[in-house]
Length: 114
Length: 111
Image (cartoon, rainbow over all chains, first blue to last red; front, side, top):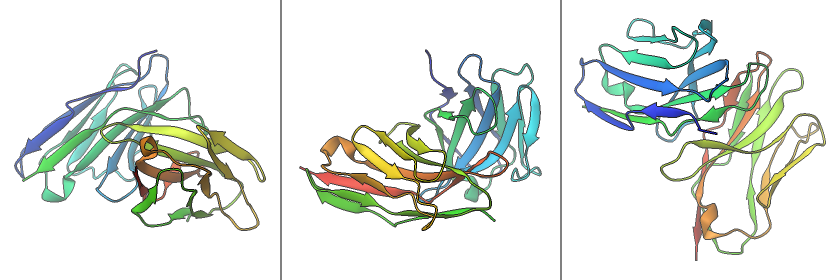
């Protein structure tokens, strides 16, 4: 069974530029999560999808971050414009459904904003 | 609100030493508790979990027991290996089923 795929693995941009990350969850997983992990901290949930609907985006900085999962499968997270403090690893995870099921994580995208 | 506190790292041990990484939590209700591991360059992987009080999760020689009376879920291993070097995260499943994470503990095992 293929795991959660993410791309790119690394990205370096300058502040005020835009960037997009892609995630393909495990086949059949209805729930998809985007996390931000700053160095030395635990992951912080940015947004949770159930199929193609948003379950929770309360911690997503909506003035600069956006995410979509149009067909209920893969998802894109965008930052526009980026700030220095956005430097972090962006993790995508998926689970069969919500409700305490195990979350499976991709390798992450390491973003450096200069 | 719900929270997880785990011991700060790095924790440095020699091979075959005993390991304990402390984790305590604050939560309403009866959360499920998890340990995730992040090996260098890889994504987070579920190591073990426990869903109710007194449950013991175990995997790859690691164990953790859900202690409701002390609100703890300490990770233990009797004899660590160099390959256990990684960052370990304690987490709980909150009332809305989202994961609340600790800050992580980096473990370094020296041969």
